Every structure is written in C-alpha cells, then in structure tokens.
Figure 1 (tube, helix red, strand yellow):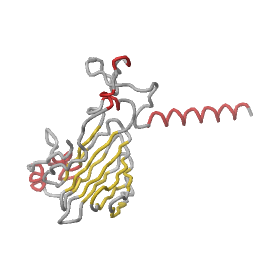
Figure 2: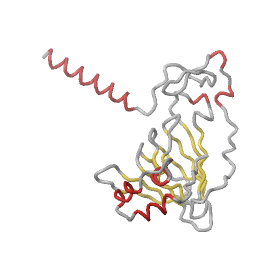
Figure 3: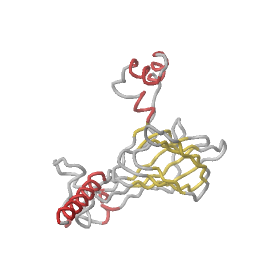
Figure 4: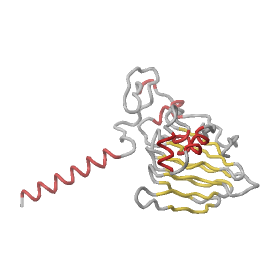
Length: 225
C-alpha cells in the first residue's frame, strides 16, 4: 500500500512539473518584474529592474488603439501591444492586439507559437477559422458579427477574413503570452531569408519548381506593426 501511495505521489508530481514545463509563460514570483532595458544579461524573457525604480509609466502606453490603422496589400494591420511596448508586461503572460481589416481584407493564415488567442469583433463581420494538428487537420470555422468572441488554441494555424466588400472591420485580441510571436505561413515558407530550396518546396507542395520560383519572387509583406 505504501508503495502504491508513493507511486501516486510521484505521478502527481511529474504531472505538475510537466504542466509547468509546457505553460506559455512562467508564473511571476513577485508582484511585477518590469524589464530592465539597460541590463546586458540574457535570460528567457527579460531581467527585472529594481522595484524602487519602477513607476506608473512602466505599465502604460499611449497606444491610440481607438484610431483606425492603414492596412497593407493583404488588407490588414495588426497593432500588437506586448512586452516590447509595455515593460511592465514582463512575466505577466498577457498581451493585446488591435486588428484592422480593409473590405475583403484578411489576417492571413499564421500561428502564435507561444500563445492562445481570444478575439472579439468590435466592428463589422469576420469569417475566422483554424486547423487542428496532424493527422486530422480538421478545419473549424465560424462567421462572427459585432460583439462575438472566438478562441484560437495555441500553436494552431488560423486566420481572419472580412467578407464585406464595402465596409472595414475591427477586432481586439488578447494573447496568453507577454511575447506570443507570429509566424505567417506564406511569409515563412516562401519569403524566408535565405530562401528554402525550390526542390524541397516543389516536392512538399507537389507542384512544378517554376511555381515555387514565382511564389518566392513575390514580396511577402508583414502586417504586424
């Protein structure tokens, strides 16, 4: 019986440690850990500055998120507020984005390697969706109206598209990391520097190499600002 109890305790401990290991951001061990931008020390995240030197501006940014943004050629603009903009977000595991969509604009298929995203539509209509991991690759999608909320699980490829040809749309997204990261699929695959071999991509996508060469010759614009 004692042996079974020990095994149970060990199993619970391993499960707890594993959960901590896969968490997006480490939990804070103090009230805050404002980034020390002058520190030369490199850590996973950022070094804290002396709490005595912290002030309200470390938790503030005049971001003008109420103002519309210009969109790019894919018809979107993502204004991200993360730890790089607000030093006080360090270790707090959260960030925010305003996303503007032109008529028929989209936030193209992308992933956030370190964060789950929850999005709410402020204006207009959005068609959104994500794809589950291999081998199912199940596509889940939904048409969202003003006030609707949708969740994109961490790491999964997802997108948002404004189907209205006449009116723009606006959304606000919260992300479960101080630095969620973004990998836009087309940009990463066809716009990498240096480029991925067209032999590799032609085989992967089962197309001719000249198709890959044409795709790689395009200008893959970033829509995160």
